[in-house]
Amino acid sequence: MTGRRRTSTRSTFLPRSLRFTRSAGAGTPSARTVSARALSAGALAACASLAVACGVVPGTAEGSGDGPIIVMTWAPEGTSATNKPGMPAFARAYARWLNANGGLGGRDLKVLTCNDRDDTVAAAQCARRAVKEGAVAVVGSYSQHSDAFFPHLEGAGIPYIGGFGVTNAEFTSPLSYPVNGGRSSLLAGLGKELAPQCGRVSLVRPDTIAGDSLPVMLDAGLTAGGHDASADQPAPEDATEYAAQAENALRTATKGESRSEKGRKGRGCVVTALGDRTGTFMDSFRRSREDYPGVRTATILGSVDQTVINAAGAGSGPFEGAYITGWYPVASDPAWAPMKKVISEQAFSDTRVDPADTGVQTTWIAYNVLRQAVESLDGGPVTADTVRHALDNGLQVDTGGLTPNLRWRFTDRLASIGFPRLVNADVTLQTVRKGRLVAAERGFVDVTGTLEKAHVD
Image (cartoon, rainbow, N blue to C red; front, top):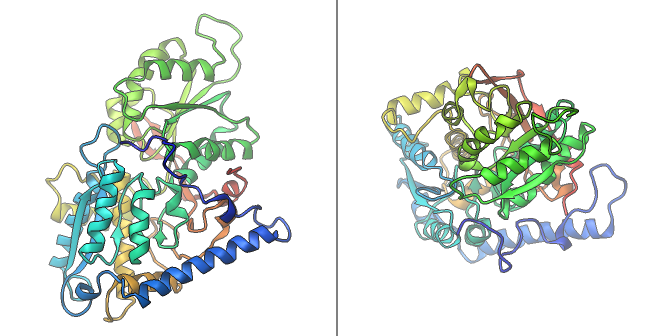
C-alpha cells in the first residue's frame, strides 16, 4: 500500500465542520468559525485531561529517574516508492554522538527506529510500538500514513516532533510540532517565483491522498504572481518509467507545439513533485524533451538533491537552470557544520546519511527541538507529558539559523486554511548552476501570506 486514495480512508484535511472558514483579517468570524475554534480547543483540553487522569503517559517509567530517555524515529525503507533510510540512520548516529558527549541532561538517549514501509499497517505498528516501549516523543520521522499513526500517538499523548511535512495532519494535530512548512510552503514559494517567468505550467505529482493537496498550493503561488493555475497531472508514485506522463506534461506546457511548429509563445515549465521517483521521471522526460527544447523545469527539495541532479546529467541535464525551493539553507552553508560534525564522528562510513539529504537535515533540526525541550525541564521528569507541555508553554527553539526561531501555539496564522500547527512558512530559493545546487537568493522567503489565500476545500 502506497498511500493511494481509497474510499475507506478519511481525508487528511480537517473535517468540514471543524475547518476555519475565512482568510485571516477578513472581518468578524462567523458562528461556524467560533464553534470550530471552541470545539478544537475543547478537544485538545479533553485529550490532555484524559492522558493525565487515566495515567496514559508513555515514558513515565523510563522517563523518570536515571534510565535512558526513549524516543522513536520512523521512515519507509526498501519500498518501491519513496524511501528515507537516512532519517533513522542519522537518528541512531545522533544518539551515539550525544551519549558520547554527556547524554541529554546527564542521561542516555535511546533511539528506537521503525520501518513504516510506506504502508498503513506498518505505520500503525510503529506507533503502537512507540506507545508500548514508553517513547517520550517520535522525532524526525517520515510517513504518508498519518491516519494510521496519529490516533495511537494522540491517544497516548506522545508528541510528534519534526515530521517531514508530507501530510496535512502534521499541521492540524495538536500533538504535532512541525519544523518546516511541508510541501505546501515549497510549492507556494515555487509558484510565486515561476509566475513571471513561465508560460503554461504543468505539475506532475503523486496520485495519492497526500498528493491531492499539492496543486492547490502551487496555484496559490502562481495566482499570487498573476499567473493562471497549473495543469494538474497525477502520476503513479511507484512507476518504473514515465514516458506517457512526460510527453503529456511537455505538450501541455507548450500547448501541444513541438520544435517543428512555429508561433510558440512563452516558455512552458514542468514542475515535478514525485519524491524519490523524480529521478525516474526525469529519465523519461529527458528523452521526450528533445522536441521541446525551450521547456524549463522546476521542483522542490525532497524530490531532488545533488545526487539526482548528477544522475540526470548535471550541467547538461534537464535540471540545469531549474528553480528549486527548499526549507533550509543549501548544504554548503556554515550553519550545517554542527550536523556535519555528528556525521563525521558517528556516521562517516554510512552511505545512507547524506548531509545534503532533506530528510537527514529535518531529523537534525527535530532532535535539536527535543534537546532544548528536555533541557528546559531543568532536570525534572522527562515524559511525553512534560516534553509536550514544554513545547506548548511558549518554548522558543533556536535552530542556529537553519529556520526562524520555532514556537508552537495551539493555532497560528494559517489556521484560517486548516493548518493551525504550521508555524514556519519560510522557504529558500535555490537553482542548479553548472550542475551544482546553489542558493539563488540569500536568506528566506516567507510565504505565509501566499498560503493564507490558498483555496483549500
